[in-house]
Length: 281
Length: 210
Image 1 (cartoon, rainbow over the protein chains, first blue to last red):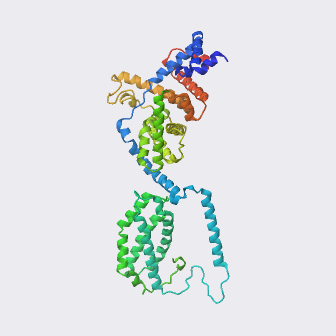
Image 2: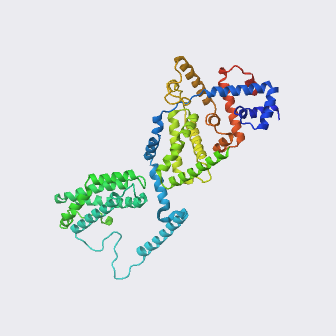
Image 3: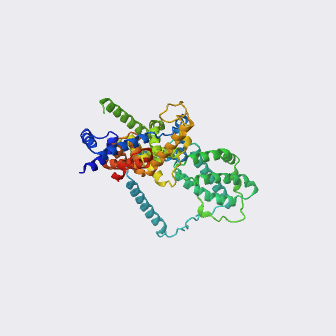
């Protein structure tokens, strides 16, 4: 190899003193004889001397002292903590850590097949003679409209109460977010919201005002739950907790129970028939 | 490397592994320990590559966020500092590639603030305004010269020159061969030499080695 070419390859290492002893000896010998490479070495070294004069602006102590707080704030804002905790807790929940993803997919597919077979048998098999079949969503027995309204209102309120109790009693600092099972709560909230729509139409009389307000208050909270963006959106859960408290939801539910408000609905004669019975639950 | 420093490295690695285990177990104070231990080195490396204080802090924060998010993927046989440096370098190079306008050198950063080779509380390094202006001008020239080299060349140069990485360490972090590191380092030095030629007299070698 051309000695100048080899020197060119070694010069960067040489200026940092990185050349091994044997190469350094060859390099130094060559510099003694070659003005070109000697000049190269000198120029590289003097360039590094200039680069040594570069100064980094040094952040002051407050920058370093506040570093962790700023980082933690950013991580909080980007929900890094939440997603990490949920990822870990999801992995270890009920000891399911060791099952690969395909196992869950296979289990879900099997469950779907079983449900499909069951529904097919129930819905499409011929009915035994002598029994009147009811269409999907149709009630088999006729219930007085007032009683139905009372039952549905009470069921709506009680189901909402149970749902909210689970959220309000959740302590983010001590409990695993996975135990909240927010996806289930979101789905239940959506079902309840549909029911709230029907109830608001039906509860139109003056003496039903308090129950209607309660339905509307619950609807607002349920809407918040249904719209949670992440499965374990703990900040939003806190908002729900605050909303329940500020609206005095549990007090209103308790008052409705004590006052026997649902009983008074039983005598209601709505001026229009119920139109959304299929959503009854 | 001495036996004592080898023992020191081993102890540190064991400590790091226990920190990693604690972070995986959800211990936030362990993560804070990790941040406190590495924040300065990560910030300075990022600063040397991107050349801007705000962006360097952003990069360093991104590094720790990425580490936190993927701590469970950290291999027990790997070295935490190498992993951190690798993420830092990749994030900083991303910033350079995304950047359309090069940050301007802020002369006030140099003539009024403490600098890293001065002890805290020592005040300005340049009591004379003319000296301060000259020094600031030189800083501008050096920063300009650094930004004339490619992101990879600059990364290799600042790692070797300002952050005391050995060639083999740079090769590990950048996942390239030592030969490539040497070649990038030579190209970076050659470009810097040309950019700063007005600060030297001799130009004979420049013409011959092109």
